[in-house]
Image 1 (cartoon, rainbow, N blue to C red):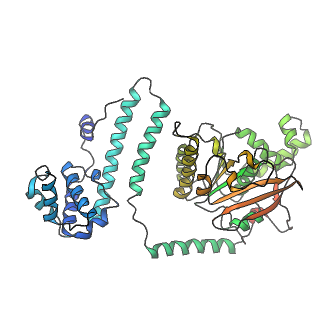
Image 2 (image 1 turned 180 degrees about the vertical axis):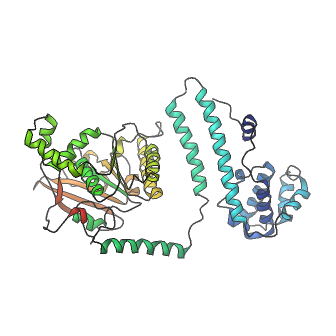
Image 3 (image 1 turned 135 degrees about the vertical axis):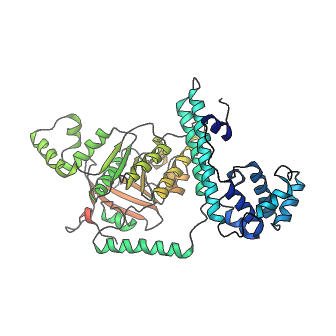
Length: 454
């Protein structure tokens, strides 16, 4: 294991001064002792580790301990606390404590100063992580996957500490943001468009309002039911409506998935395409279908070793490039776990939670296919049939079960959980090759590319 270097050693090596703001640290500590309630303004932003100077860390810890004990915070109480812990001389004596209160007249700018201090601390942590990573990468026999996971974990910890400094939005700001979203939905509805990303199925649009931002949608079924084909249908219809789709096929090659889509688009039998038994008429149908189909905004990724964190990283990059409005993953149980030693239920829980975080942080819908356990064979699927973890049910905003009723051989979509809409069973039509899906009762005016909300 490489020897960890502290920030001073790292910067002396490169001849640079660590990112810091000593004057702001002094101003914040002084303000904390001037106004008793000032600690509540910074407690969600700063920790003792946020301060560059060790003396300042000790003083901040004293202030926090007084606040936690419900005691008065001022020059005298902080000094007394430091005397009791034998740390007053370590920080520079009573004179230094007094000087801190003279650095600031009031606590008016304490939050702004605290955010700068927190940001500089994050920069120092990144420098430290970078140095440790360099040392570990030079070691012989280093497992690259373990090293990458370690780096991601450390950076994720910095992200979490940065996000935790968000103390929330005011009531009026949330109202304004909500009204703005409602107004956008109304404008979409007046234009005859689905407010959410269209599912391509009117009954499903009516029940869900389309695929909405921040939602994690689980589509679960037993093998052979057609969940992959249904996911391809969702991808095609969303892309036709102008949305950039990122499709992760972790079970099949992108070219195999494309064969299914081409079959549905051209109406050429899927098995004939698979076996290379298509004639000139079939080729003509395929070529005609590609005229508009080939321009759909879909990005395909069939890397079988992806982790949820890697999918998150890809999403952030593609979102910044304007090339990700919807994610579809086939399927959840094939996503590699970051912690190989954890039990399977914990691994699935971590993956499920990361997918929900992607939907929330990137403000997009995430559709993830999932397996069902063997108990679901031959019966209508239920939430308890979700395989390996109850976390899937908890994290999901919508849970959909595609299934075929063996009694009447009809194809149904069962919505078992729906936080923003209705639940129930909806019959849809699926052709024999499972390459095309439409509403079972469809009027002539219905166009899935321009579906209307309920």
